[in-house]
Image (tube, one colour):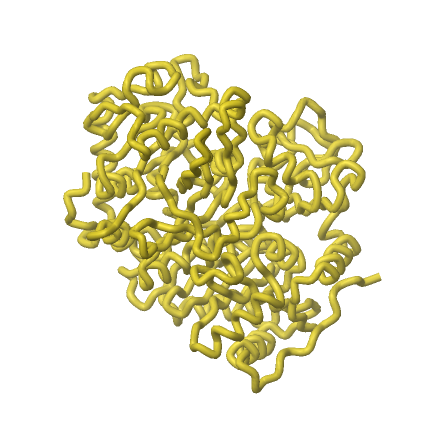
Amino acid sequence: MNARPRPQAMPAAGSRLAALNDWVAEVAALTRPDRIHWCDGSDAEYAALLAGMLDDGTLVALNQDTHPGCYLHRSHPEDVARVEHLTFVCTRERDDAGPNNHWMAPADAHAQVDALFDGCMRGRTLYVVPYCMGPIDSPLARCGVEITDSPYVVANMRLMTRMGADALARIEREGAQGTPFVRGLHSTGELDPARRYIMHFPEELSIKSYGSGYGGNALLGKKCHALRIASWQARQEGWLAEHMLILGLETPHGDTHYIAAAFPSACGKTNLAMLIPPQAYREQGWKVWTVGDDIAWLHPGADGRLWAINPEAGYFGVAPGTSAKTNPNALATIARDTIFTNVAVTADNQPWWEGLDERVPALDWQGRPYDPANGPAAHPNARFTVNARQCPSWSPHAEDAQGVPISAIVFGGRRSTLVPLVYEARDWAHGVFVGASMASETTAAATGQVGVLRRDPMAMKPFCGYHFGDYFAHWLSFDRPGARLPTVFHVNWFRKGADGRFLWPGFGENIRVLEWIVGRVEGGAQAEDTPIGRLPAAGAIDASDAILRYEHADWIGEQADVDRALAEYGERLPAHAWR
């Protein structure tokens, strides 16, 4: 039985959705699908999508006794990560995209990718997916529509965004006011890795992605809209779209400070966002609330503070390494109603990945009998997609229309040497420099070699939709009269000793660092000035001196490398003495 959703009629051509109707008709004429389905985001529609994918093998049901509502998707073996070398920002002027992006002229990009879209949906259903990034009633939220031929993408978008009838109604209201929506066109195509293009047209507020079914390449509301396109919008409109988690740290006094933190993918954002304080801290009254685990949109408020929303409604998290030790809240979150991608399974059909427990899986991520000779059982970039409200630490304030006020911004990366556990920037300009000079050892979240040190300003190198020089200048522009900007910090959980072991226990113990950060914001915690910023004073954090201190001689080479990296942005690099 084919249980896919039945096609629905398009809204009336004369309605305020005329622009959307015309675009859908234009795409249908190009791609020539067998059916068109307008998604309403309902439970019945979601159930029908799952049933159809179970019928055709796109999804595999997991053990419904232990993981009710959970399913497994196996990607094509060559379609498992972002494809940065085929990701383009297509602006009229090459310099506007900047050296931090691959550039293609808009006309050339449209022609190249439209030739691939020509007839690509024959035999398939074209799904029209209206969605809202951010709380549906928030003035800070922005809407989009993704057209896709992948029911897997539709199901994931339902978990990751506010998708369906409410979003369509907002698009209709905003259309009457002349507010545009972001247009995203996606097709899995034939999954040819040589033709796996993602074209972003920020001046047109549009995205075209072809040849992939993997999350970041296909869920166009995520990195494509919420960062690459939104960062362009944010600069035009005076806000920030950032690759940042948002957490609320509640102190024993009942005060909650909201912290936004930028780490490259697979460097612990989700673990930090869902942190459970150690028992001694819990007994004192410390709590951590999860607002978002990956993306933050920050807007200046009337009170001079930066207020942030999480534009996403779900988590698209990295599974390997997630365990009862590293992130028990994540495990509780994904125990039901979750779509897993590229994990292994046990003999009784439960999801499994490296770092979860000591069991031996039966099948690897490609569905083969597990053999260590074939590599890890779960792909290192295996993922889970789940609604954020299932998280035990989910904050109801994630739905606040005005967002939450940010007290501190934290930058961080995976550095095995050199960088101390935590330090504070001297002021906003220095904080921008700290973020701009960030570096991290690469992980499996993107294609390419793992473990190479890469400069990744603000964790935005793969995601900023315009020239980094202009981006840094935009950050600096928030330091204006009347501003009450967050204090900026840098952390490094990954420093190693001479024996190759991590010097910091991490996970729940990270609250010791957050406590010091909040103490600095409130004015109580002690610090000492150094050339790289303010380090915790002796005894301020219970940690070894080896991880808290820095060696000035070692930073001379670091500074030279930072200077070379920033020089890449040429004349558009701010002249501000921001160090």
